[in-house]
Structures are given as structure tokens and as C-alpha cells.
Image 1 (cartoon, rainbow, N blue to C red):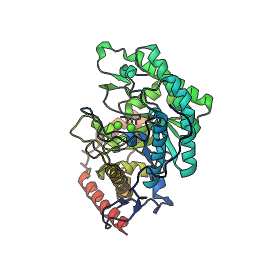
Image 2 (cartoon, rainbow, N blue to C red; image 1 turned 180 degrees about the horizontal axis):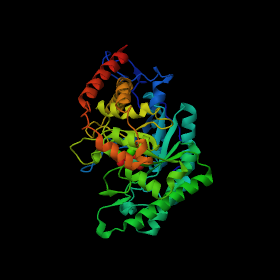
Image 3 (cartoon, rainbow, N blue to C red; image 1 turned 135 degrees about the vertical axis):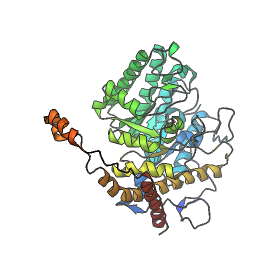
Image 4 (tube, rainbow, N blue to C red; image 1 turned 120 degrees about the horizontal axis):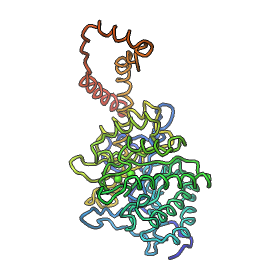
Length: 446
Ligand code: XLS
Ligand code: CA
Ligand code: CA
């Protein structure tokens, strides 16, 4: 293995031009039909509302699925270090060509399978130099960085929540090294996706031991972050199922309870990285989960993709259904936007779509889908907001004298006539939502 300087190639994705907005009447090609990154919306370019991020792992992915091997095999060098550095350069070029502004990755996406802890510690500083060089040259920024604590076979029983101390310690050491990368590249988020933190059967599991260990692990990571001066947030990423049956980070409410119970909430630094497909797995709609996270003040960032509702596994499809992001962006826009979070494209083309062209068509599809969603959400909020204000104009937490004089309140209530049955008007709202779609397309075509 070499750790010498690796020469950046002039081009990693030949034949793929810089993707520009051409509008939906242009012929289909390597251009955006709907997403116009430079269009100014509410005072800033559209791209800065989205903070689109390229996910290094899906770029490198060989598109295997659980029944078979890779259909895409791109290898830039037989030397593992050189190959990894080339992949970072390839990531830079892909992001720039796709007008993405951010990147996200696991430690192992930037390294290689089976690397030892010792080699990892030695190699990571070189990788960090390359990331800084890329950021400096292209203006790309990290959205978040993370550690892969789920691929290595020793993590099969969990990493932080493994019953075995040596596994827990290995996980912690790896997380420390990854957090150091987050600090060095200035990532606004460090993701702690649970991976295998959960269990298949209660028969061989002590929940309290595992949850306490999980909390200890996260406190140790946080403590290390404070020591090295990491300034970003920590993102916990919900996933309802898979690979375990019960996941300790199953959904927003479960994570919120965990953060409260173990005292993390008081740091104000723990947020949710919500992945759309992860919600789908347990029948949790993105819009509801995101709205809940916003309510609790813990929405950090979004992993954009979609699942296939009839199947119970994580398909990480490129986003194609416009309505999903449209409804998800409604609460996001209403609450003031994603802030330093963004849309990380945790999505890949189907295994049978294995060409480089498929890769880029897939990303363009996703960006265009979410752009349409964003524009629809903006218009839908405008149309629905007055109706909602009206609907809730009378809502109070508690009638005054129910608190001050509960007996009087009861007497008053006994005199009340039967209440008027009011309409929830869901269908009327849905018609307005459809109208918002028409307005959004008219604006995008203008
Ligand atoms: C896998 C997860 C993973 C996290 C980061 O299902 O989505 O990729 O986003 O570890
Ligand atoms: Ca994810
Ligand atoms: Ca996923």
C-alpha cells in the first residue's frame, strides 16, 4: 500500500457534462428539468435551501443486493489507498458536475474494507488532507461525517450495544477517529446511525444493559468531541427495522425519549438525521416524522431517497415520487428551512441500472424530484396557512377557570348545549394542495 501523493486525474466521469438547468421543455439529457440551482428564492439561491450532498458510499457502491454481487465495478487503482483517494477526487467531480454543494461519508467509504484500527489511525490524516484539498479547490463542504460500525463481522451483535466489552471499545476507538475527521474538516454534523444497535430476540438480550451501554458510548464520543473542540451537532438517525428487529433508534419519538432519559437533550447538540426510506420501513411517513422532530427542536438533516412501500427492506431508491418531498418540505419551510442541515443523497440506482449514465440520470432524477417537492411545498404552505390559522384560532391549552375554579367550570359545562359538529375538511385541503402543485409548475416554467 502506498500513502504517497496520488495524482488527480483530469477527469473521472468522462462524457458527463456539467449539469445545468434547461427546463422541462428541453430534450431529456444531462440537464435539470426543474431544479434551477441559481434561481433566487426568498433571498438566496435555491441550492442554498437544499444543501444537496453527495454520499460517498453510494457513489462507490457496486450496486449489490442481498441476493447477489456487484453489477458495477469501478476500480481506479489496485492499490487500496490510491483507489480510495481517486474515489474522493471522483466524488468531487461528480458533486461539482451535479451542482451539489456538500458531501457526506463514513470513515470506511474513504478507506477500504477490512482495515485494522492501527492502519486506520495512520491513514486517516492523509485522507483528511485530501478532503481539505478538495474543499479548498471546489468549495464543497461536509454535511456530515460518520463511522461504519455495522459492516465488520464483529459488530454483528451491535457495536456500542454489543454484550462484549472488547467490541464496545473497538467501536469507541473507531468513533473517536471518525469524530476527529469531523472536527478537522469542520463538519456541522457527526452522524451516529445505530446500525446494528438493537436486537432480534429478547431471549438473549438485556435491554437495560444495552441502552445504558449505548448512552455511555455516546457520552464518551461527546466528551471526546468537547476535548478536541468539535463544534458541530451530533445526528442520531432513526431506522425502524433492519438489520435488527427492534432498533434502539427506531423513530423520532424513541430517540427523543432516549435523549431525554440519558440527559443528552440538555447539551442542545443532539439532533435527528431523518432518512425517508428508514421511515417507510415501519410505515412512518416522512412529513410526520420531520414535523415531530421540528416540534421538539431536534431536526438536523435529511437523507434523501425513497423506499418501495410493498417491501420491508431498505431499497435506498433515488427519489422519484414528488409528493413525498412536497409534504416533507412543508413543515421544513414553515419552520425556516434546513439551516446547516441539508439533503444528503443516501440513494442509489437499481442494480440493473449499472452504467455511469444511469448513475448520473439517477442523481438528476433525485435532485429534480426534490426541487419540485420544494416548490410545491412553498406554494402549498401559502395556500394552507390561512386555513390552518383559522382552524386553530380558538384552540387553547386549557380554559381559564378550569384551572382557577374547576368546580365552576364543571357547572358551566353542564349547561352547555350539544356541540356543533365541525368539518375537518381534509379533502378540501387536499384540493388546495393540488392547486399548489399547479402554481408550483407555473412558477418553475416561468
Ligand atoms: C443505512 C444508513 C447509513 C447511515 C449512515 O441504512 O442509512 O447509510 O446514513 O451510517
Ligand atoms: Ca442514511
Ligand atoms: Ca438506508
